[in-house]
Every structure is written in structure tokens, then in C-alpha cells.
Image 1 (tube, one colour):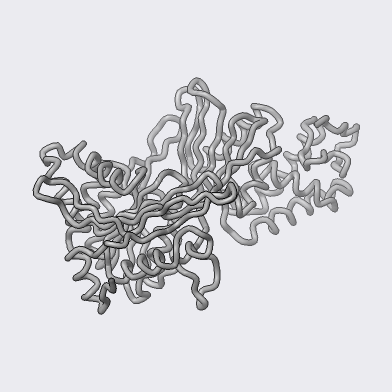
Image 2: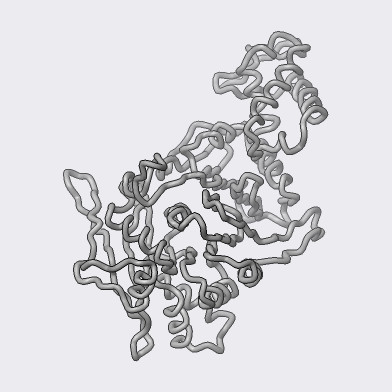
Length: 451
């Protein structure tokens, strides 16, 4: 799109805004932007100016301040297009700001300054938004990185950071590649397991992610205090399902969540949130060493009288070991997630993580330990059409005489192709019966398995 000529006037009027709302880069506009930026800095708190701020009145406050600043410079202050363009450019993320505001978008993937994709409702889509040039993209990346006290340059070309709203930003500079930017927006999706008249809204069952029978089974397992391991790939819906399971806990129970990066937002009335402390670097000098990781927080949480322990994700060896140790101390009804491609693969990955730093434990010893901790493994996946669904629920019923896991499938999902469309058959396994340990947990909660 061709830039619009600004003329000789230093004022900004509607003619300076191109069709997509972006401001052209010329001397007059640059001076105006500096004047408005100075006004914002003097008038508003840094918390409000932060592009990732969660304040509900942020947009109104900033746009009102921009309009006031422009009003003294000419008629442009009365044009919402000019105010919006300055808002995005000065205190937003430029062409990414409308994408950040779209509640249906979960991921923003900037491959080049002129090539941006988003994940909207589970599907990747190209969007026409673009940066002016590579320098503009680098400027926005530098802004994001600076917000968390970090820097990105030739010596430090990779940055992964969590923003104040919980969104994750990953940036890559040369010589590794790029510049590229990936933003995983903070997940605000809340799905119940089953439709609930008292809590209207979408549920896994109503959106086709599981059957009513599956949802009823998982709700019963949550109440019966089964320990649950949720497996799946990145973006498959593991955290969303974890939130759904926790929402089924009795409201009187004390829930403690432990996360490397805070992503879970729960509605439980008795909820305590713990989050790891990460290192921050500024100008190459360490200003805060990483002091606390998931393993440290798990150990401390045991002293906080938890009824339920929820660990956001198992990623590392030390985390895997201490999670198993914590859940083996009588804290039934807990849950966590892990990256894996099936229920069986989840157990294999957990075993591998533990063995990396605890080589003194034999594979049989590790399997026996894992089998004493987890009752259920739930595998969740995202289909090609963007749907997230439960593909498998398996009970872990211990280990056999040879030291292998005894797995009993509870539900298996089968694709059914009809008229070119893929439907899902969430079929229960007909000969499934709960193992002795899970049967006892059901009985303790006054429930009985009906064949």
C-alpha cells in the first residue's frame, strides 16, 4: 500500500491514515508521535502503558489521553482512525494489536515482517496484517523483550518470556534466524466437562470434545480423588482440560497449583497459586538468579496443607521425580500434564525423565513407582479441522510380574468418515472394569461402579 503524503503541516489529520489504519513514517508524524508519547509517559502509569496490561480501563484511558494530546494540534484528535493508529503504534504492538484483542486467536506467528499467521479456533490462517519493514518488526520485538527486563541481540539471539497477562512470547534474531516472533496468548477458555444449567457456557461434551459418558466418568474420577496424568501435544488442550477437571473438585477443598509459568486461572474458592521464579538478564548482567523451580515448589506445597496438588506440566527430570514423590505421600486427587503422543507414550516419557538424573533407579523400580502414583492417563489431541478432543482414557492398574505396566482402556475414540466429514465415536471399552485401587477410591466416596 502506498504511503499517503503528509504535506508540510506538522498537524495530523485523517488524510495521514492509510486504509489499514497505519501511520506513514515521515518527519511530521515522527515529531507528533514523540509529542504524544511524552504526554502518555507523563500522564499514565507504566502499568497502563504496557501492551500486555490486563487493566479493563486501559484502552479507554490511553485513547482519551491521545485524543487530548492531538486536540491541541489540529482536527486529527477527533478522528478515531488516527487515535487508533497512534494507540497501536505507541503503546500497542503495531499490526499485532488487533490480533491480540481478538478473543478467538490463541497464537500469533510472525515468520517475516510481511508474513503473519494466527491460530483462530484451532486452525492456522494467514492474515493481511504486516509490519512496515524488518526494522519495524525488530522494534516491536525489542519492546516486548524490554518489558521483562531482557535483551535480544547478536550475542543473545533467543528470548522466551512471559508477559504480565500470562502470554508467552518467543523471539529469534540473527544469526539463528529471523527476526521471528511467536506469541501464545494467555488461555482464557473455560470449558466444563458436562453442560451445566447452573453454570451456563460451553463444555467439552457440548463442543464435541468428548461424549456425555466420558464427561460423567471424568467428573466421577475427580470426585473420587483419582490421580490423573493428562497427555498431549503443544496446543492440544491439556491446560484447558486440566482446568475443567479442577472445576469438578468439591468447592470446600484446598487446591494448590504449581506452574513454571502461570497459565491456570481457576474458579475454585479455596485456591493458592505458586509460580517458579525465573532468572532475568539485563545488559548481560544477571540481576536475579533462578531461585525456585517446580521441584522446590512441590516440596514447599506439601507444608501448606493441600487437599489437591495441581502441577501445570512436567518438563524436566527433577520435576518428574518430585511430582511422583509428592503424589505418593497421600495427596490423592491431584493432576498434572505432560507432552506425549498417547497414553502409553506418556508413561514412557515420564519414566525417561526420571531416569535421566536418577540413574540409580532401575526401569522396573521407576515403573513400579509411577504405577503407585497415577490412576488414569487421558490423551487429548487437536484434529486437522481444529477440534480438540479426548482420544483415549486409560487406567493404570499397576505392573505385572515382568515389570510392565498393566493398562486397561476405559474409552477409545474412533474416527468415522461420513459424506467427507470426520465424526468421532467416543466409544467405551465394553469389558472395562476398575482396578482394585480405583474401586476402593470410588467406594470411599460412596460411589459404586455399575457394569
